[in-house]
Length: 233
Image 1: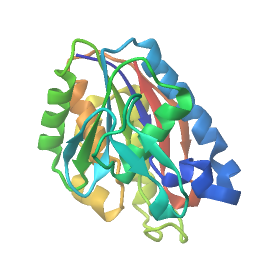
Image 2: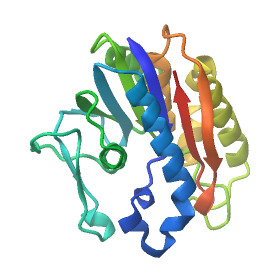
Image 3: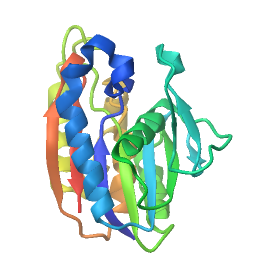
Image 4: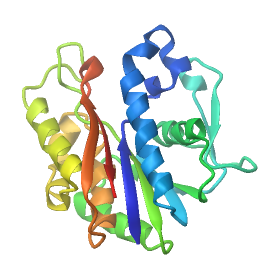
């Protein structure tokens, strides 16, 4: 059963070594993410699952390794404590693993679940239901960004629909509105390059019967990309 969830953005720029001289620009986001991970620890889960977007869906075991070498820095992370495994994490889960390492996570075993960015809403919700059934007390660290089309210099250029899409997503994440998350348009999300849509709908499926309340800790659009940090508990 799902007992808590944290929602965090997943840009590799959260890792200061990747951001380099621009690192201070995301300090507020990093602080909010640290607070969100603290809520997960306080929920005393039997299992923590890090959920994030990727090209293909897949499950990652405790100890899977991620690296930011592709972003120009020699920084590696591991999913949970213990011996490193052979699996290699996609970028979103590597950022989640970095957040957990930064927090000194040792509260419960950790698994990873990558969600294909084009996975339709129904299968996303079904995946969430399955994750919530993996242990008596399950917590989720849900990684994902909003639209990448908020400004002219955004990765997806300016799209006038982006602000409204992000407003709906932020309100749903901040109020644990499961119906609103399930109702996010997957085609529009793809057009707006909103990589968080599928992971958020996994969260909606996992939380269907959990009765959790939500709170938004951070909302901004640096670099023209919607970043949200929230907690459900």
